Length: 142
Image (cartoon, rainbow, N blue to C red; front, side, top):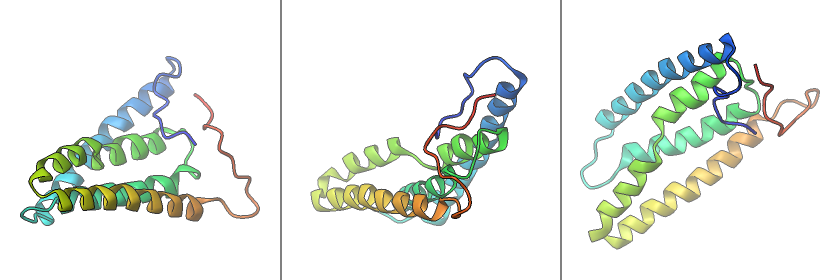
């Protein structure tokens, strides 16, 4: 499974359209993430980051085996979902919760464990039907 952008694969026009899709998708994902931060503002608990990362793990896994390497697919995977989810915020928030070690460890375990479970579920649900071949090979280049 390839969740990368494929942007560096040559210098064809396809690479530039994928780069543009990642940029536009990144703007969309960042705005969605900001909206989630506003909607799920919970004092003392990083609810928005937890929801964004769990949802992102599921959606990326769900779509990863069905999406190719087209510009829209790369824009969704790398742009939208890459900007929507955030490992760095999770890590900073775990450290910030350090004055409450039980909460910090609980948040980390729910984030990692939940992400793994949802990614596995997404991969299972995203698997093509019985008539379509399932491959873990990366999508074809430009």
